[in-house]
Length: 282
Image (cartoon, rainbow, N blue to C red; front, side, top):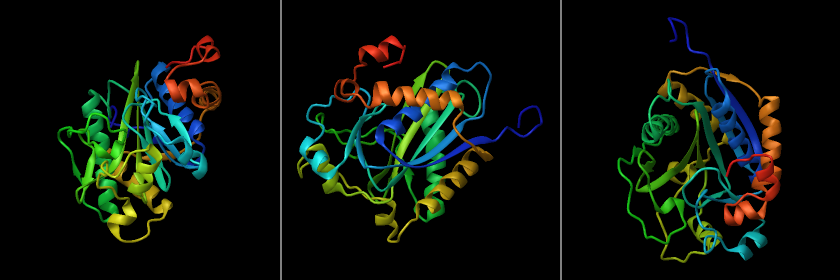
């Protein structure tokens, strides 16, 4: 409640499958809109898919030794570098969530770990609605220093079910805005993930998607409804379906073209000359 009145509804963006550069560009455009705006705004929850499948690298993750170029080419799997941190994730049969919001007041008044905790509670409520009990990780796990795999390492408030990390999330903050996004896999093939990253059988974390753990099919629409309900429960939020603003859509077009579709960003984490000239952030 704000001054005795209901809080404004969160904006809900339901997007179908899109290519990797566009997906990351939209997420960063949402972050920019909250980082630069003067007036407080309700958060945005975006749910989306990937087509074609793609391997995403963390913002600061070295590309060398983190992907098998031949496998990606033969399997028509894209490659992209996220605006957020973390390690490599293979996005195939999944829904990805992204939360963009203003920092410093409800529902995100705290620091990085507090934001992970709050969003983690919403994802945990999502999984419970689907019939899967998951537990939050309270401390980061150790990992072999050279692993490129997101699912081989757990960060605080990520969720584990039946010994397997289920949802991998990463966060980026910029001025007054925050973006947290994460992969919610319906199916997760550990062998295929290792082939995409060029790692061997020795790097074999316990992995599984929702369908693997539940033993039944999960329709993407069912997952979307569960995610929305989970956020409603955890945050006491209401949702209003919406669209990108004209400014956000234009920013996403620029980011996709000048940043996320470029080899300099994808392979080196470096912006090209034109991207720097128009003031895009690394």
